[in-house]
Length: 438
Image 1 (cartoon, rainbow, N blue to C red):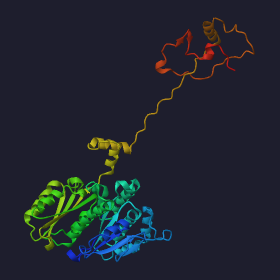
Image 2: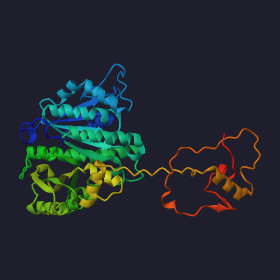
Image 3: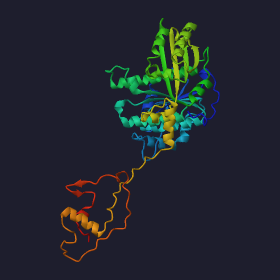
Image 4: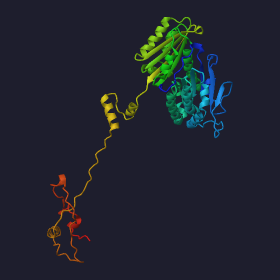
């Protein structure tokens, strides 16, 4: 994340006095926000940003990005059109984040509004000084490579515009769902996973803990220049809730089979339980997390909520460092960059490309200069007749020698002549046959 150009975030009040706004962008983002339990996010403000006037409508404040040529008909799946519409309404978008400490942006990437307008909205919100966290989904594979490419491009732009991007690839979540699940239920299930992550961050911000995670720590974690952010929220209830939570962490679909923790640079862990939360519960959870990411900087917080009696919830946010571009290029060329020698050689090749030596031009040397007597002698040997005795059918033409330099044959200079049926094939045909050139 580019933290150097980010305005200083004011220190917000703690707990429930923290001002948070949740903004859904595009058709998918608006649908996700409408499905949220408003009672659970009771103190948050809500807003929608759309480019299609036929989108969901209701009491939630909505900004319609519109231009005269479009006339409320949307972007037609074109992210560039969505970006231009958002740029034209940039000042209006800034008002959505006015007097707000934290902004949650919710959208599905791949279409025109989410992919085009969302990065612009994130930039507008950051200019107000708010902490901006985006919760986005990536398309299913069946949606086609065009939407996949548009989503990936938008994700790269969003990482530069937001303080944190928590991304859910729908295809990864789909692999854990029932294959016979209906089309509509599949989308609801993936939306539910994204909502879980949003709920976890919300609890982290709203609940003052016995071990507090300060707002500034969350800002510093998300604003560091990491390449990927992973998040997950796991819950369990009953007598075995601690063991159940520990078992769910490595299998959570958003943690990439536990690999997100293994390669993490920083991990934030928020534990929420009821009045019956014990120190042993906290120790068991943190021992498991620390064992999975021994090289990461771990930030832990724990809070107690009376409504969580006999329940336990753990939220994790893991950030991984960005892969250097040179490593990506080497991987594409099947070059092993693990050793310094190969990496240096690859870099030298890029900086100082060498040109292949051009092959020397093959030149055939001209025929040696012969006197008239030598020529007649050669012809008489080959034909048995003297060249002078041949009947002249026209005016005698004097054969001259072109003023060409004799080129050394190099390694063929001392080679034997090529003789075939008594004729020296190294001599030109017109010399062997005594033909005068006009």
